[in-house]
Amino acid sequence: MVTLSRLLLSKHAGDVSAQSNPALSSEIIGISREEFDDLVTLANLNHVVVRGFEIALKIFRDAQDGMRAEWAEAAVAEERARIKNAIPFLHAICTAFQEEGLDVTVIKSLDHWPDLGSDLDLYTNATPEQVVPLMKRHFQAELDARSWGDRLARKWNFLIPGLPESVEIHVGRLGQTGEQITLADHLMGRTRLIRIEDDTFRVTSASDRLMISTLQRMYRHFYFRLCDIVDSAALVESGAVDYEDLRYSANASGIWEGVATYLVIVSDYVKQYRGTGLDLPRFVRESSRFGGEEIFYRKDFLRVPIMPQSASLYGTQLTGLLRKRELHSSARLGLLPWLATAAAVGQKITGSDKGIW
Image 1 (cartoon, rainbow, N blue to C red):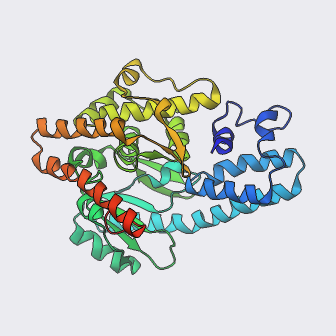
Image 2: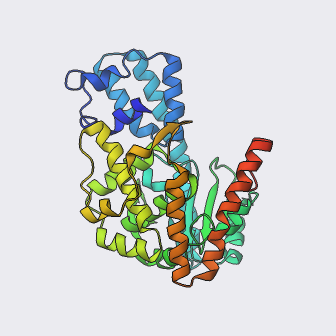
């Protein structure tokens, strides 16, 4: 993880000549084939293959290391081929919704561009009775098995012939247990259009993108992929984030402290490799419950401690929903500890949490 982080986050990551950045270059010059393959596997898990190995390729070429340059070229080419196959499917799905008068937006998947996630994620405010037949009719899609968590979150996974990635569609709700009604209700009205290759896609606003990332990392999985750090840092540095809007929207959804903590973690991790963190407003840092000092690396990802750090964020979210008398959403969120416990027991007994989480 350190090598990938230096490639993507170093202050001089964009200047990769061996002369101007010898420390960064020395990380991978002379790397063995086995080490290189391990690095590709890690980059795949963290959705940074294209970005990471394009930089590595420049280093190998500068060092006139033809053999390793070929390795890097092959890794990038293989990932680009996967993405080239997936993007037309994603655009076709969005187009099919629009042609039937249904709103849909891409969430998460295009945040990593020019990389792409391991599945295709979308959100729609249509009904399941509209979504499922549409996917079957237009794409001969088959429904994948739904876990308890999928049912609570109101999401459906579809398998489409010719597309290795599954298509995950969130319907009318967001959050691990579908507790996020406020965020979901406002999502479509705040979307924007972006251009990817020759196609146009509707994606979430900067604020909503950060809130969805926070829900995924701080309230569900409790780990960061490296792409989350790189993507969010780039979004902040682009100047696209309206922090007052973000605070207002996140407070309305009961996750402001989680969003602030997420941003501070990203900033602290960036600081490890650049010497300086992100330029975050003071009120963001003051609202954070903890920072990067609590994050640790284990099993290919950057882990967020569940107890007591993430548990306190969960408690704050639940309390906020109860205060707003969102009893249905509170009841759904209240099931999360039981769901997590069942998943942990299933993992211990069978080696898999499939069907639960």
